[in-house]
Structure formats: C-alpha cells, structure tokens
Image 1 (tube, rainbow, N blue to C red):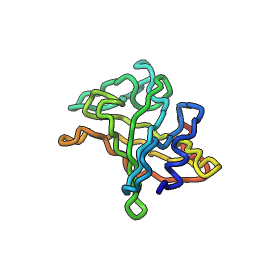
Image 2: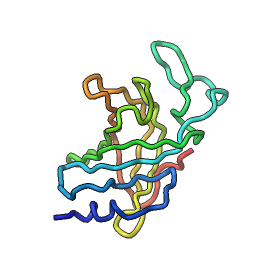
Image 3: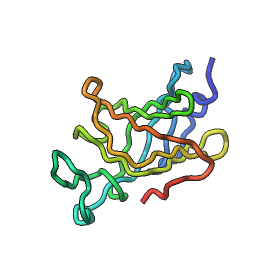
Image 4: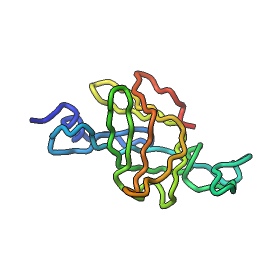
Length: 152
C-alpha cells in the first residue's frame, strides 16, 4: 500500500535551493521518511565580522556553512517525529561537509505537499557529527503555513 507522501515523492518538482522533497520509496511506512533538502548557505570569509565558528577555542571561517547564500548544497535526510519533536538526520555521510561539525543557518524549506506549500522550519544550530554513525541530526524543526525564516 502506498502512503500519500510516497505518491507525492515521485512528482517532478522544479529544483530551487530552498525546498525539501520526498525521495521515492517502496511506500512502506517506517516512522521516518526519506527526503532531499536543497539549501543556499555560506558566505565569504570577509563577511565573518567577529566569528563564524569557534573550534577548539579558535574563531574560523568555513566555506559553505552558516549564514548567507554563497553555496548551493543538498543533503539526503530522514525526518522523524516523536510527539511534537521533529528531527532531521543526514543519511549521506559527507553530503554537507567533511568536517565534524556543521553550522546550519536558520532556513525555511518549502515542501509543496498536499497541493499547497507548507514549510519545514530549521532553526540555526551548530551540530556535531555523531561519532558512531557519522551523521548530523538537526533538532527543533517545525512545520508552518508560512516560512519563519527569510533564508539570508
């Protein structure tokens, strides 16, 4: 039996760098769904005023991380909801970065599901790679009818 989300997943969608789409699956409901998120992130090193990321006490700039829209990037993720808590965990180990951390800026990603656009809102957060799975997990995600963040 196919769930409605799986049916939406196979529809061709225009690729923009601020959306999240369901990946085609065999339709089995597993408690989490596979997605690909497309985001614009990052800025020039000269735009790091005080600090971008502090690593081992050092303030450094890392390309394609943090505020801005210098880089177009994508990552395969699974979304999972337990109660009201929604998380996204990467499934492509080095899709976002080879670093052991990722500075995710606040982003609202259009879903286009259900015939009208909803948004998955990801608050800004510095996440560390899980030492066992090597994946990143983003927390505090919410859905809304309008974007919460302007993606700058």
